[in-house]
Length: 504
Image (cartoon, rainbow, N blue to C red; front, side):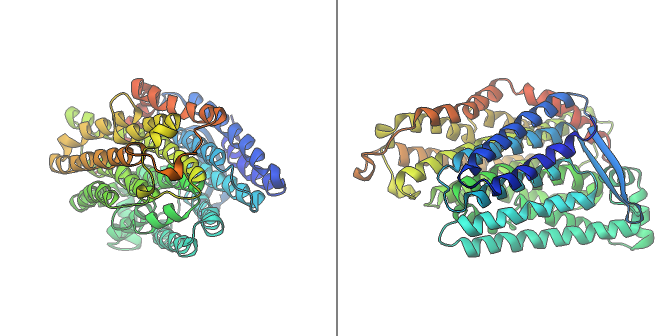
């Protein structure tokens, strides 16, 4: 249907304007808009199906002299990212019930951020894709800066500066590509790269700068994920942001980076990234292991799960960099590549769902504890709030990768695919799984078990409304753990189509 993606992207932007003038009713406006957006994205997901091709394509000449087209489309990957963004936004809005100060502005910025996410996951021309990429940065900055914790100013500034540096490097690289090719369409550039035409055009117009251009694009996405050592902005941003906004940062915004690597960097600069494969795999393993290890020494629950998020997305990076090998004509290698990428895409969705739900529980714990989220402040909560502890435990075990829950399947497929491609990287990365298990079990032991502190002797358990609200997310974790083909059946054809166009 022509215009579907445009209307979907415009929906939260219009909702942001309405919420901005709705005063105390802004949250209900945001709930309604985000719920409608979720239903719409699910319709897009089921409509795309298992074709593996771009659907809902919109293409209009915009600025022909600059090679700019209004080009939108989604395949299984894009549709999944839309559904994840809508789901995480709804969770964030639901978790923001305690926002009273300038609530119209707050929920307007949340919906504007959702619009930026939708645009990023549907745009196929760099010009307006970059507009949406940057648009998502602005509301995130103000949400941290205006509603964050005591150190919100430095945290917001650091977040903004890091992201802008990466964006500037990526912008310069694509401007160079425009000079060389006369266009900025992702599909066309990927086709040029596959046929070798991109290499010829860059050499003819700019000289030997392909590796430099690839590094610029890689930096933009590496900061967003983040890939170590470009991660130092993340712990402060996650811990100082309002917990409901941390849900958006970890559940959706970090996925912009991994999506960009798979949609843009690998198809266009696959050969250049292949030349850096060993170094990139080393950084991916560092992200997995060091991210988990850094979580061990944290005392703040938000910082623990901030580093845990780095660790979990490190598995996606491990898969992306491991598949940087010629696979055409080798059925065994093709199977490994497709398994690794299927697992990585599933991991993107699973981590977004699980991390958003964990931070949702932290938000409810923060409200009940008067703002305290120190690991040492709790103990024995299972005796006082058993429903809270039981339901949060499901999300924690999902993050741990317990078989039967959604977190297990993606990680299993990643290691199934990566091990034949780089057994050394896969072997070392297993340490990340072990350390993550220790971290999650420590949180469960320190927060839920032991003697109950007198400070929390009157802490209320989850209300019926809260139980009903979190139930769908937890049920989805169980459903995807038992029937992962609900997602894999759609994304696997997309993965095969992507692989078919790559030339390393």
